[in-house]
Length: 112
Length: 114
Image (cartoon, rainbow over the protein chains, first blue to last red):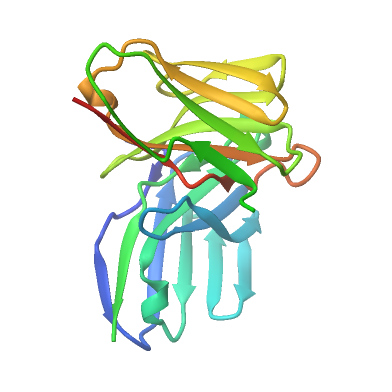
């Protein structure tokens, strides 16, 4: 079992839908939780960053961390075709020198 | 100008050839990383370097070597390329004086080994 599990999708939704992307993990030492967005033929870019448990909101994006369940989520409200990309979760700990462990990524397609 | 650049962007080579992928950054970050990305497997860490004199193996270092020529330059070599090294390769940087967690990625090098 990988340390970080993420459904690869693809997830196809209509424009305007609320999207929920999720990852589970097994290492209880993880403290830092990140979501990266990767467009086709581009490098990943950091979208959201959360320390420990709780919620963080940035515009249409909300990141949630539930450490008790070892489960993190990214919600996208009012999804747009421009949100079509692969979303990778990543997590790290001070014990691991902050080097992130990445999920496999979920491919999201938002169709007009 | 891009903060993290990779050359070449695309490369086709033959089995047994030596290949070098180069990465340069203008972000002033001390940490640099090499990843490969394969469909369905996500990003896997090959090597990482926390400063010029520090080189560490990652998850999948066999068949690869690296050189940190300067703080801003980190090269990945395939001494004798084989077809299963066909993948998308990414260089990344991070700043240990910041959160230490945010990585900045280059545009990637698409390598095909025939």
